[in-house]
Length: 114
Ligand code: 5GP
Ligand code: ZN
Image (cartoon, rainbow, N blue to C red; front, side, top):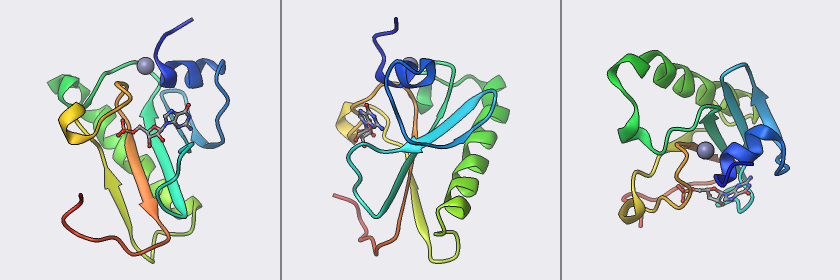
């Protein structure tokens, strides 16, 4: 069993509320939502963070962003507006070291982020 929380969600040994799934990627609701809509989009393969992708992973990166768009549509926030965020490293706020894109919406957001 993996010691990575998100790998365990992929394996099914930790439960999650799935929003979208295909062969290579998964999206599920965040356990501690920061907005009315807060989902996470991940590759099933363990990659620690955005900086760890290789040049040949560009297609996977495009797919992950496309899934963020799909999740926004499925959640009904595509037209009202939403935010896509990925934290890279602890200083930026990353707490789970399996790359993920946050899809947040359903309320107004401030800029710059805290
Ligand atoms: P980070 O701080 O790394 O950018 O984001 C990690 C996110 O994962 C947080 O928003 C946190 O609430 C979420 N999270 C942590 N553990 C779990 C879990 O077991 N299940 C789900 N669904 N979300 C989790
Ligand atoms: Zn992992």
